[in-house]
Amino acid sequence: MRVLLDTNIFIYREDNQVIPEDLQNLILVLNKIRAELLIHPLSVQEIRRDRNKKRQAVMLSKIGAYPVLEMPPTPDNDHEFLKIIGCKNDAHDLIDNNLLYAIQKDAVDFLLTEDRDIHKKAVRVGIDSRVLLIAEALLLFRAHLQKDSVVTPPALSRKPVHSLDTNDPFFDSLKEEYQEFENWFRKVKREGRECLVSYKDDGGIGALLIYKFEEELVDAVPRNLPKKRRVKLSTFKVEQLGYKIGELFIKLSIDIALKDDVYEIYLTHFVRPEDRLVELITEYGFYSVGTNSRGEGVFVKRLIPELIRAKGLSPFDITRVFYPSFYDGAKVKKFIIPIRPLYHGRLFTNYKDRQTELQEMFFYIVEGNTIKKAYVCNSRIRNVSQGDIILFYVSERKKLITLGVVETVYRGLQHSSDIVKAVGKRTVYSMNEIDSISIKPSLVILFWQYWHLDHPLSYYQLIDMGILKGPPRSIVRIPDQHYYLIKETGRINARFTVN
Image (cartoon, rainbow, N blue to C red; front, top):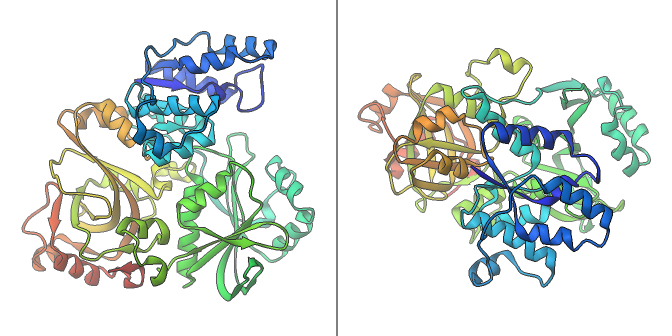
């Protein structure tokens, strides 16, 4: 495995003397799994041009232990790539594009960078699963050492707000942004509100979600949002990067809203350059409706499709904009996928009848946090494509339980390294699992998790309905009429579907 290091990872914490502890740990892990760590020659040239000789010497000493990527591919003549990624006439942009092109052309397996512009470009090119933050990489590659176990961060707790200590450094930035923070927090505590909180290994707060139900006009320019019952995400902050806690907060916010028959969520936020929160929430359908009188951006997510906005969108674009709603009409195919209870339990930790593991009292199962997930198998099926609906049949329980929507499909992967690259940071598979699958050509399906059927369908029901003729051994396509039977009998809420 070859990992390209962007030189910004050595200075991203504004420390030009000491390599951060999590980066040191990551490099140790990469060495243990015998990954080859490389520096792009253009990065070295950039450092040598630094007029600050002291800083230049520090940086050269940090990267001197790593070999330079030989004869890297250049995007100079790849006009399609440059058109997609955008090209400015400055040296920094040139280096960013060359780093990403090394991934695009498989000169390396992964790129490690803390540069948010590079991550944005990676999304446009479709290689974002192989461009990693330090925290993401640490989780991903630690799993390779742990073989058959799951790497897990500290667990999420539901607690009363009054139990939180506002002297925790986690709150420092909030106090700076909001002069009235202490008074507001005191008010929230007296209201008896609950919150979702994650603690770091040292006991400090690592992530926090405070929410409330309200029914009032929302201040926004150019136009106020009319009075309506909504869930307001009063505090949404994540410092524990790489654990997918932000994605988990979005998923739980949707669950909280739907449980009370609320179909709109919003938050206000002082937007900064390279704003990670804005990137996250817009990825899952929040959109800006203006700015309030305090200068905060106002972001709204609607859970029920607006027909005017949905018109003209592709099936998968409806997923992007209106998640958890989705398109299930004739333009997309429908499939049943058999899955072992072990993997279903790891991917879908919020399934109500799932057996909770002892470790979850203290730790997350990382892939259970995500909306975006990955499924790996040896099926030779050729016609699964973006926007298609997949229904997971849990083999040993003999029940059809969970629905997802396909985002990307990789076929005919011959080597475990190819599977690792395809899955990327989407979910955590151990190397033992990947090695056992890669004995045969493999299929990777990246998908978005949707609903668990309110009424899971048993094997015998599926037989009686004519949907199955026997236990599914591999991925099976079903006709639309069979899917609509499942939709009706399994009680998939039609309010969240477009067809």
